[in-house]
Image (cartoon, rainbow over all chains, first blue to last red; front, top):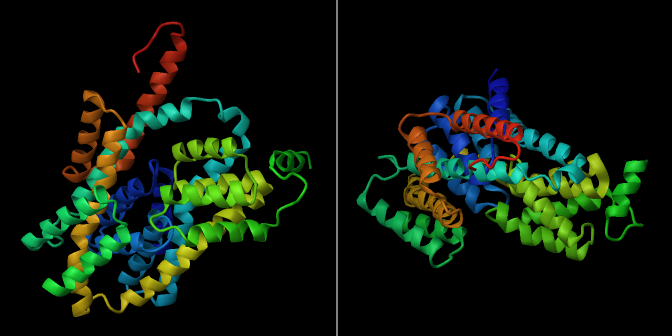
Length: 182
Length: 202
C-alpha cells in the first residue's frame, strides 16, 4: 500500500516540477515532510546534503533517497526499501518523460511558439518563492540548535555566492567543522 | 520508416546509425561526471553530444535547452530525453534517460543503504549538525541569483513573497499555487486571443 501512495505522491511531484531541481525540493518537502510527515525536517535536510554532494541531478537523488528512507522508516526490509527508492525515482521522472517526448514529436511546431517561454516567465516568481520556502522551512530549532549554526549558514552562503566555491567542498567543510566543534 | 529517415537526416553525421548502447553510455558519462546536476550538465552534454559525437547541431541544442527549461522535470533529464529522441526516436530517448539517471541512482542508493545503519552514530550526528545550516545556504544562493536575473516588478515580487509565506507559514502546497497561476495564465491567454488587436497588459 505504501508503494501505491509513494508512486502517486512522486508522480504528482514530477508533474508539477517546473523550475528545476531546487523547485522540486520544495515540492518533495511539502508532500513528504509537511503533508504526509513520512520523514522529519532534519532527515530531509541530511538527505538534501547527501544528494547535493553526489553526482547527478539533486532532484532525482533526493527522490531516490527519500523513497528509500520512507519505506525503511516504516519498518520494511532493505530489499523492500530499494523497491521504494526505485518507485519514487521512476514516478518522479515519468511525467516529464512523457511530456518532453510529446514536445519532441511536436518539435517543429513548438519551436516557434512563445507560449512555453511566456508560461515560464509567468511562473518564475512562484518558483523563486518555492525555493525560498524550501530554504525557510529548513530553518528549524533542531537544524539551528546553536548560535554557531547561523555562522555556518552565513559562511556557506558567502563561500558559494561570492567566492564561487564548489558546493561539495562547502558541505564537506561544514561536516568537518561540525565534527570538531559540536 | 519515414520518421527514422527524418531523424537520421537531422543528425549531423547522417549516414551512421547510432546504437542505443552508445547513446546510453554517453549519457551515463554525462550523469557520472556532473556534480550538482542541472545547469552543470549543459556544457558537458554540449561537448559530448554536439562537439564530439555530432549528433545535434549547435543551434538545435540551444533550442532544446530552452524548451527543456520550460517543461516540467529536471533540465539534464529533459535534455537527455530530447537529444535521445532526435538521435534514435522513442527508444533513443528511453536509452538516454536511463543512461543519464542510472549511475546517480545506484550511487545514492548505496549511500542510503549504508547510512541507514549509521543515522544515530555519535560522530555522524556531529557531522550533520555542521552540514544542516550549509544546506539552507546552498538552497538560498539560487534564490538570490534568480531574483537578480529576473527583474521583478512590484507585483511579481509580491507573488514571490506571497508564495514563500503561503508555503512556510500557511503550509499551502506549492502544487495549488502553481495550479492557480496556470489557470490565470491560460484564462489571460484565452481573453487575449479573443480581443486580438487590442494590447493587453502582460
